[in-house]
Length: 150
Image 1 (cartoon, rainbow, N blue to C red):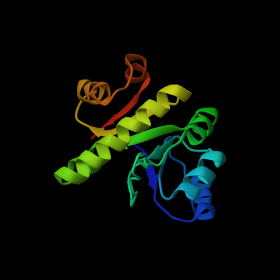
Image 2: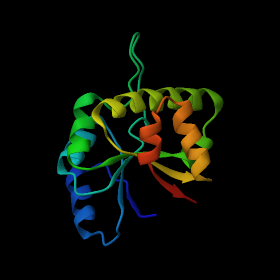
Image 3: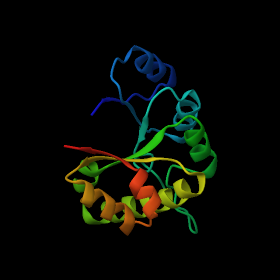
Image 4: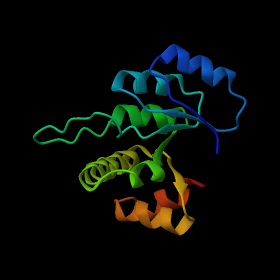
């Protein structure tokens, strides 16, 4: 699949990306400032799970970790936004429902900016496509999605 870089320091992440010899470099999303700086750097392939973490929903808005500015930067630098099936399966019911609602919101934002989606640790291509379709992805998005199986 590729190397997953999960550090909270932007400069450290940049160094690890430069040193990596893997074909696919995956960066684990952190806070909003980290995500913005690492997407602007852009010399990697996948930003994994920006919806994860300690995010707080506001009264009329879901904090999903992405906005239109970040998705346009990702599209410009050809960085896909990753969804990790294995991570979602581990969650309890309430946390899973919150995570899936954030992913659904991200998919809508990604569709507008024409940013790629990557699905990691899925069981099959059909499972991944039906998952994306059920969360509101267009058929064009599901066909262009990059999928990695465990």
